[in-house]
Image 1 (cartoon, rainbow, N blue to C red):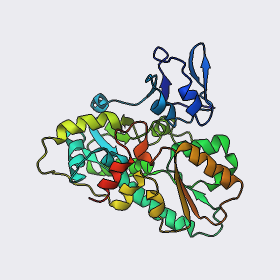
Image 2: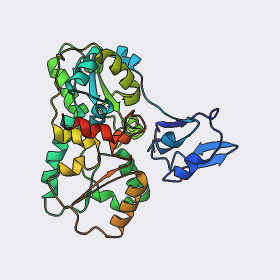
Image 3: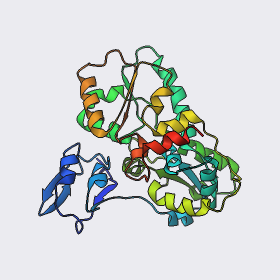
Length: 320
């Protein structure tokens, strides 16, 4: 079996063995050995909780840097919806899209647009006969990995569709091949701008053991400061956003559920709350629900370990 590649790592030199991460780890993957933390790779789900709570910054996320843009002739950015909620007093998402082009990307495909595609399929799927309910969203890789490890009985409840990140990458790559037939497929680089460590692990490990369509993963926090610099000089954006409020809303808790247009749903966030919900599903406590959205991070993806702002900002963006 191929070894699972993690995106959360430990800097032993900074670790003081204070046990803060041990107490907060939802899967008990951390122990204190020889005066510092040790992470059990078989139990770690890359939720990033230890990164958020470590007072010594000993835990860190593994991701790619913007300097890797030189690896490809054509660069495609896939901004996660949570990126839009990082900026205060943003008049329009168009400024963010334009900023990505000015950072060196040749094309921008919004993951929010792929989220809208997934929502449309989810509505159809929930109406099919014989579907095992409640259906659990497959969007959060922390939740799907936790189910596979700790709640295998619920694996058949997981929504059988690729998450928006993978749908966006596949569509973007297909579009670029058609737009740039002069460029070899391997010279097209797909860059996902991630709010969390779990999505980095998703890309590293591929889907069901096969390589996915994302080539690099950038940290939303790192890109934020670069975008601030280039956006400062934008008067009128040349490029504009194409996604709607349904897709953008996916970044905060309840956004995916509201896009299903079904009132028999439950949306929960925070890893401890998600574990409680999974336990209740396993005990058949939710027989009247059709759909369950679980977000490991507080507030949804906007609360990820690789973000800058919190979920309050996204609600302001959704009203633009």
